[in-house]
Length: 253
Ligand code: ADE
Image (cartoon, rainbow, N blue to C red):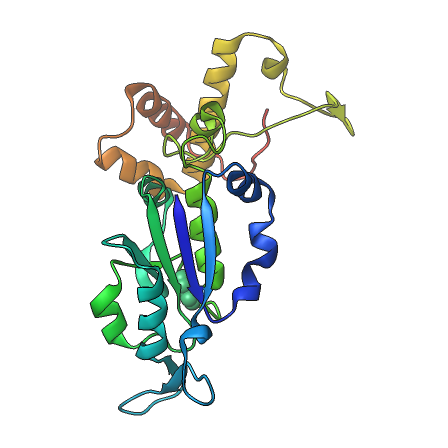
């Protein structure tokens, strides 16, 4: 997979590209990430990339000429061009999985008040927001998108880890424990030491459901509407609801 990230702040990505899973995927040749400095495509005396907004108002807008040149320098055909902006579609795991199947991606990082609308109209296929808050630029959003997309690219991490993990079946993850068995008088839930895989699976599923109902109940409602919850889960949801959702604790016992 080839990813081009267009930004006015290339240094932002230095540590990011050297981080573990991503660095390994790059080293193994599964992904190839290129950072493109938009300023390298600004040819006026001051190499300016932003300008005042037509119609008046605060803030600056990314100029179309350097951005279009930068885009055209990397564009091969009809690959997806993602523009990071708080007014985009909300990013989620489903989107990460969808993007992970693309062979080429271009990510344009927004800055200031945004980019000239003509760039969006002419090049952008997806306007993406990572959450309902305003960052000072789209670089962190691009990192979020790249990180979550690359880790689900086939071969980057093992399939079992992916299957087990949070959000894979629409639920939040169950609690995890490691040694020691007793930590400051708090024991690991005995079922996890039982060696009974079916009991462990059921316990984990129940814990996932309890946590999801407690902190993100809308996930369960949405999955239910979409018909994506298997009967085993629905049954546990009904049972927990009939007893009342425990709002107090996330403890494993
Ligand atoms: N740029 C500024 N805020 C953002 C957000 N929440 N998501 C994506 N890009 C952004």
